Length: 106
Image (tube, rainbow, N blue to C red; front, side, top):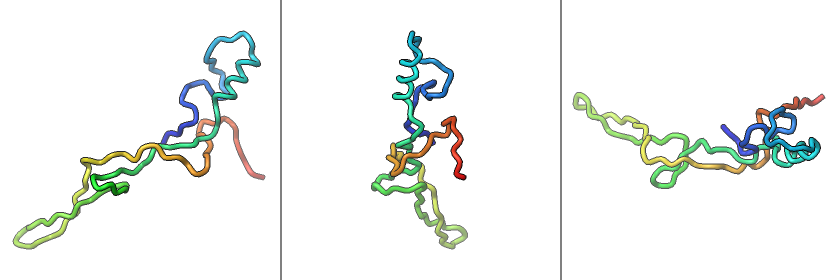
């Protein structure tokens, strides 16, 4: 799942890619530090809304199947008329997976 830290390529402060050609290297690294952050504040939701406004990962409908004169209940998965949940704001920021620094606790 993607996060919403920095979407452009080469914005990490330690990356070797250059965004624009600038004459002053200090100014260039300062602008990179302002644009990029290692934290993710939002993510794309993995659940869906149905027609009634209920929120879940999957939706099923109970149907009755008559076979050989016997009634049997069967669950049918609903895949139509579902809307994705959208962007979710995280309670606590997470580190981006491409952050180039190893963090460990001693």
